Image 1 (tube, rainbow, N blue to C red):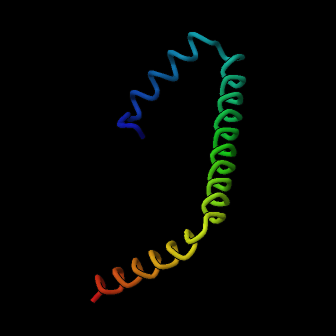
Image 2 (image 1 turned 90 degrees about the vertical axis):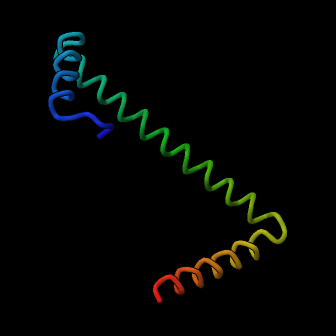
Amino acid sequence: MFGLGMQELLIILAIAFLIFGGKKLPEIGSGLGKAITSFKKGLKEVEEEGKEVCDSIPGVKEVTEIKETVDKVKNSTKIL
């Protein structure tokens, strides 16, 4: 995990415990979890909107289908 071993993680957690205290750490963890969830949700929305825009442009869908077909053929020849 990010090149950190178990000892490094324990040291970081111990320092965080000393700085913030036992009562504040669950609140910080909860806030961080909500922020990550919100960020992921926002990314999914942007990806969906991007797909809708790409699909609305003439010819993009056909080109995407051709690319997928070409990729399948490439992958099938690699197996042989």
